[in-house]
Length: 273
Image (cartoon, rainbow, N blue to C red; front, side):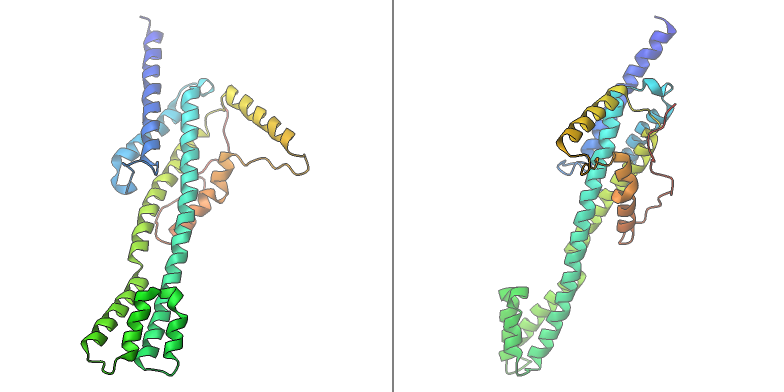
């Protein structure tokens, strides 16, 4: 076998291996997968997979002849990771709103408890007004405190303990914090893909068939929409660059995540060689 033949065989094997690695990463970040990445810093296997994909993209010798199958898979991986990151950001925003709501409820419950303990004239009305916010169990418990003749009775003490426990739970937001940590750990992994793989992929010229498909899609869209109202869907690269990942990363970082993102880490567009 000629030397060039050996090289070609090795390249085929490498291509298959990279496709397999991309598939493994895709499964690791799939929210429906049972074996998801949990903590980026502690998952060397995940980092090794990303590094292998990145190295293949960067070191491939003739980028104009880059395997279309690998390009499509790598591009699809970045797009999937970007979409998942966007979904995670929405979930974090929802959790933050819920956390703020819980803190406000804890303050209101403290106020109600004080009103009931002091047996203010309107305590029954105030408790009744809050029944939609706290549920029947807390409303009934506040009623027990308000009707108790002695603060030393067992019923009073048990009721007080229950209300204070609810206040602590609302203040701590423990389940929300746990959910946020899980989502943010996944977001780190997703942004890692968005930075490392996308940055390497921008060096690969768009395969000819991909360009043709994009032109066909563009033509179809132009038929469906009037020119004055048509607005082309932003490319994946622009989505990554414009707030979908960069601003989202900064948003998540401002909450909990510590992640250094170089200012030139994300792609402006695909390069040509």
